[in-house]
Length: 297
Image (cartoon, rainbow, N blue to C red; front, side, top):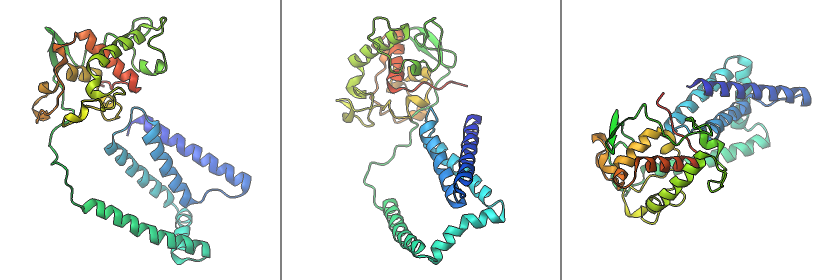
């Protein structure tokens, strides 16, 4: 687990314990261990799902949540008093010691079987979709590519248009100008490149990728698979900018063997656009979606 996530979780735990201490001091009673565990797990899920940026892949999210649940369980069962306090509302509910707990037990025993039945039905019901094609959506890129007669080493190349006011390369500059107007006459150089990239995008790309870059263009559903949805956190938010440039330049027919079958309708845009034009389109896509490219490190 990256150190940033560990620090965020530790900070969340400290804030949670401080809030519980405040409740005890103010009202004489804090949050029970049972609800402490539930609230901490929910808080961790919220942070992983909605706070961490760029978005975490779902498989990694489930792994992190499994670790969080394990840590919470170990923490709650570390002492006899803590464990007894945690399981006390569960035992009272199962034994229906009060009318309130009896109502909770009736609701729980009524809802859980229904949810389990729905889940089992959805799991075993026949699926009439087309068979899944065993292809790698984002195959490993080559070390270098040839574009317009020039050799480009993907792990070393950088966009010449991802620059700040001083003309220096700037990572995450999209966030700084996320709400800026690219048509402003006093717009910085980066926003001018974004505007030019948007013009190129709407001249060539929006027919498939859509006006909002969400793969809902007028021709999108004529293809199988449909074009990439750039607003999805599993596409350009997970890729390096030179990887995206490689895919734009070479198109579907330029996929390596592990990308077979080459069903993508993406044309090799190096035959239609200059190198600068392709870079500007990529800058527009990242700015419009609010994502920024991954690094090779």
